[in-house]
Image 1 (cartoon, each protein chain N blue to C red):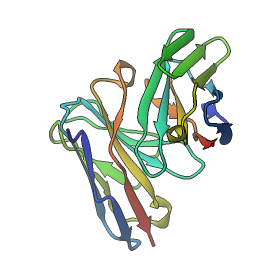
Image 2: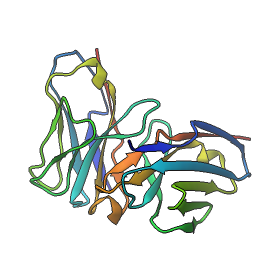
Image 3: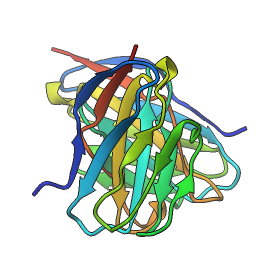
Length: 114
Length: 109
């Protein structure tokens, strides 16, 4: 049972470079989310998608973009990486909205921007 | 603004009981989650409370008081594997999750 798969697990990136973090789920969940987790702060929502073909902005969307071409995949793109985007990124999914059940998280992608 | 407060770190002894508190201030409220996160790993679901009261699930229980904006997670018969961070998250009026910074629980033998 794979659940949610993220790639890469870790990446060091030069500032200004473009980077896509991949996220795939095999649970046929409708909703997917991208969070970043920084020391001393709670998880912060970057972008979300309630269903395939739709996306929405979260709390900290600037510098990031997402797409949801199908149910399973929800990639996160950093168009031009900056050092403040150094973080651990978690992709998550839920069957419906957040109050319909738990969020399932991927193992995270640790990104360092130099 | 919206805010979730929980202690940064707590220490407890193996076999004991520990209570991790969480207070929230959100625009509207549609429930509260607790997640467990071991170091370097993904958060995993523990509980969801939307009504006042205590919900018990094995060694873990979660309590909610909507009038006080307060929740706690109670862990009984602590085991070394319970050493982890515990994340509190409230659902606001827009059905967005507002996350606390987490409480790091250290279990000592």
